[in-house]
Structure formats: structure tokens, C-alpha cells
Image (tube, rainbow, N blue to C red; front, side, top):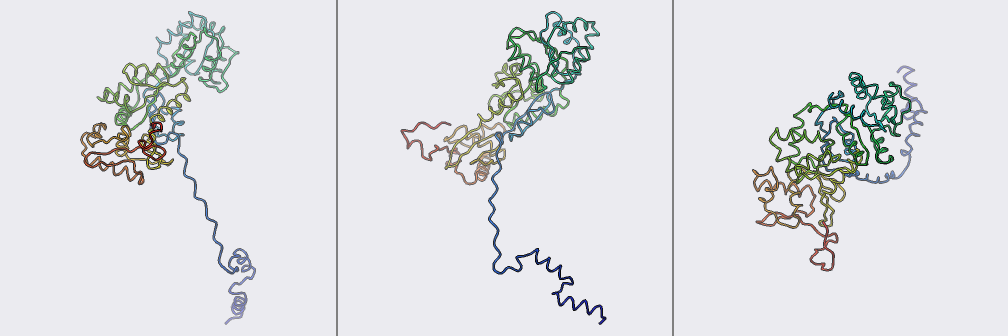
Length: 436
């Protein structure tokens, strides 16, 4: 054996198989439990994580129908847990209809303007260019010179400065809604306001100023075009008819007319009206939007003010009022559009069990035969009793043993609803009747 190998081998035996003793010491220092005698202490038991919080609108589906591909309120509803279907029913083009714009311009010239509200710079420049082509720009700018100029954003202020104006005001939040809110609540009645409109929904803003006692000259600087995707509108009509959404929200009368027109073209107008009358909540931005639906005797809920926040609040109120709350077997259950809230936990159900549960919830403590259940489900007419039985079976498995749906032999099914105390109300003659 060579001398070099013998020295290395001896050095390895002396240090326990480690050529460098300092490395062994470092390894022992890093793992102190190896030298400790006795059992290794167990780790502290970790606390189970808290269940995820359930949004206020979780389990509901909402269709937002507007002139935008995705309305800002869609994000607000989704943040509260709702499933949102955003549909662009009509399109707007930033080129005004010449005849309508000329009539609005003449209205500005026939009466003194106290306030001018500019809401979109590009459309306002189109308006000024059209006024120059009609040779009405000089008297129109003279009218504006005696008015209070309000710009909804910095670009609108720049468009006014390009015309030679310097005294320009704006809202703190740089929004049109902020300007209209200021004019509505801070001005005395009787003012004349020229309001530039760049979307169909802004007609509701002009209407709310008129209701406050002001004379409003609405200047539409846009034109409405049909939807670029009619198939999307037809699918939306089908979703409403099949009750795949719990509520729809509309932002303009043009959006309403587009929805009704597409329902007629696909021969589902009567089914759509029945769905909106009975099962699907309809929420509109304002009375102008709701007018075509009210002519059809469709119940409509209108936002308190034509602002996105108020519209979102109206949708939230309409959905939560439709939720059915009950107590069964010491469990709290809330039936929502496409899910149930069982003791604070959200459980999503399939369409079949959910549809049967909603039918039984309309008639608690009443036995419904399979034929009666199918009669209240528009698309279950061709189903048999076995389909209802399977839907009830899946419903019971999803509710994890909660005795909510009972089977009455040879008669049908019923939804058992108990009082909060857990006793039958007939055994408590002095108690007040249970409120559903």
C-alpha cells in the first residue's frame, strides 16, 4: 500500500470516517437532537385553518346587460361572490347622429345656459366641428361664455381650454357621476343645464336632474349600433328562460329593447316574459330603463339613483330578498340561486337537485307529487318520476345527512321546516307564528 493512501486511511479511522474533523463538528452542531438522549419532543398541534369566508352574493348568478363589454359593476358583484355574466347588448359609436345633435344645438341657442357639463373630450370635439360646419359655433361659444363650465376629467378640461376658456371646474373624483351629484344636491331649482351624453345610460342622469327641478338640454354625441355578436344575446335569452341566472341588470332603454328584440327573433319572447315575471329578478338603472318592461307588466326594481354603486346595492337587495332561509334539525339553511348555505358553508348543487329544492321551498311542509314538481319546472315536462327521485337522492347526499327533504310513501316529497327552538310549532300554543 502506498504511503499516501495509508496516511489518508489512518486519518479517516481516527476521525470516524471524516477526513476533516471540523466538518464533523459542524454537522453535529447543525443537528443537536442526534446527541440528545430520550424521545424527540413532538411538534405543537397546529390549529386547523378557518373556513373561507362566504361572499354576500355567493351562490347567485347575475347577468349585467349594458353597452359595454364589461360594466364596472360586474367587478363589484364578482368581488361579493356572485357569478357574473357580462353581455354587451348594444354598441356606441363616438360619432353623433347629425339630426339629433343639430336639434340639441339649437336648443342650447334658444335658452340661456347656466351650466355646461362636458363628459367626453372626443365626442365634444365632434360636436364643435359639427357646429362650425353649420356656422353655429360663434353664437354657441358665446352662450358657453356666460355659463359655468364643468369638466368631468382633465381631457375634457383641455378641450375647453383649446376653445379659449379658462375658468373651468371639475368634480373631486373626476367623474361625471360626481358632477351630476353636485348639480343635483347643491344647486337651487330652476337652473338650465346643458349635459353632454356619450352613452345611452346617461339619459338617466339627465332625467334625475330634471326631477330635481332643473331644465336639462341633453346633447347626445353618440349613436347606438346593434350588438356585434347576436349569438351572445340569443344565448343570454336562453339562460334567462332556463333560469340559469337569478337576476338581470339593465343600464339603458336601448339595452332593454335589444333584449326583447332578440327574444322575439328566437321565438322565446313569452318564455322570457314569464321568467322575468316569476323567477328572475329584474333591476334597472332608472325609470327610463324600466319603462319598456313596465309596459309588459314585468315587475322591475329601480336603483335609488342612476349610479353604479346604487345599482349594485339594488341588485344585492333583490337577490338577498329572494333567498329562502329556514332551520331544520338544528341546522340553518339558506337556499340561494345555484347553491345553499348550510351552517355558513356554501354547497354548490347541480341544476336538477337545485331546481327541485326551489320548488319544494315555495311550499314548505306541503307534500308535492312528482307530477306537481315537474309541472313547476318548465323543462322537466318530458321527465319521469325516476328523474325526480334521483334529483332528491342527490340533494340529500349534498346536504350531508340533514333531514330536510322527506319522502311520503305513494304521495311525494315535502320540505320540512322547523321553528328555531327545534320544537313543533303546534306544541307551543303561546308562541308567535314562525316567520318565513
